[in-house]
Length: 153
Image 1 (spheres, rainbow, N blue to C red):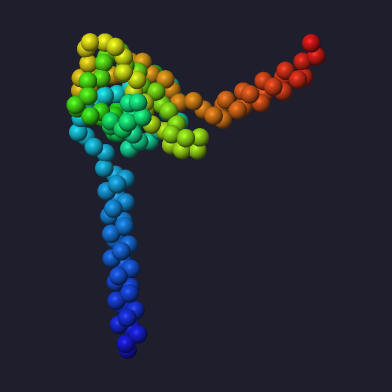
Image 2 (image 1 turned 135 degrees about the vertical axis):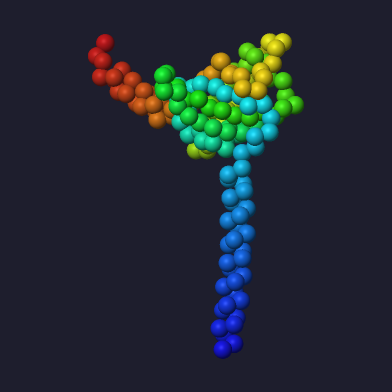
């Protein structure tokens, strides 16, 4: 009888700890801050970019990606993101999709321009650079080097 009580207590402790970890994971993964200035940008390719990824300026996190959708008329990916409201982003700034590391995730890097006017809530970042596909680059390199070797010039 005593072992049943000990097993029940240990089971309750395990369930409580699992519940705590699940709640922490849920809060960390599903909360995307809506505070700040909401901007959007259109990209040809957004390979690896997901809702919740960071927005950075000079490597410093200044916001998060809030929404990703496709524009039906142009088939471009429209990425909506927030930027800290205390920053003044010039209207001629650009947005690039950058890899954190070779195997890591992606984020949007904002490169501030030099314009006097700043982007307001709901504005679009016009100048964009889509994600680089490492698979496509490797494929181009492999096939271009094999074509160069087979050319008897």
